[in-house]
Length: 329
Image (cartoon, rainbow, N blue to C red):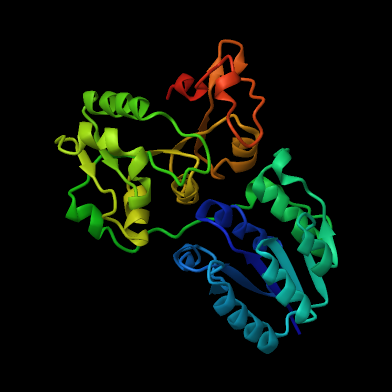
């Protein structure tokens, strides 16, 4: 009989994509794997090349999700649970369900109480990639693995439709996605404007993507290009499957440290990703994983800008001031 394994990652798009490939080292003849993901991210798994079982929980609706999760655990009777990232009540429910092996990161108080095979990782030090941190937890179950981590990638399937491409008559275009959730430093808007202008001066068509939440990062760009004949403005006009189509059929994608960069890499696209040198934002931990990934950091003539910031930019006391201005694509 297969061992039933629960893998839990209740987080954002990029974090989930950096975690999902770990199940590829688990022999399907030995392990029966189920994922627990944040509600609303189901399309990531549905459109992935590997078929995955999952349930969705909304970590923002604690009472409702706890009841659902508790009942689920009672019915499924898992042998192993690996907690990559989750709130305290998830670890508590795993403990309450008496799952024999409870693996996860020893960090917050609940991890010491409810996990019995925890690992100290200190992810905030960003000494390795997020995927590698996650794989280290799986190795707690499997032991050492004779496989290159770079060979273990999350991949999306080729879109089954090109309807949105035909709708907007998109041909030979570059995607620029300037928005983000504010979890990292971004390229200034005037730099995006300069870059888009360079593209249109070359005769290229540009597609700008984003959501309503990205608006603060798009206001100046929108004022400059929304009506430009070579720029197609698709902010808040795409669902997830349509976004996949737009990224897949593009020549290349430009994006900051955000979920779109990880999606583009998982589509095997030429992705040019803009990153901050802050330790917790650094591409050493958060770079998209794929075969055509290009990373841009602030640089000086001697190399990468040395950054003393850990979680927050020290711009007021930094001799480099807004170093993100130094990035050139």
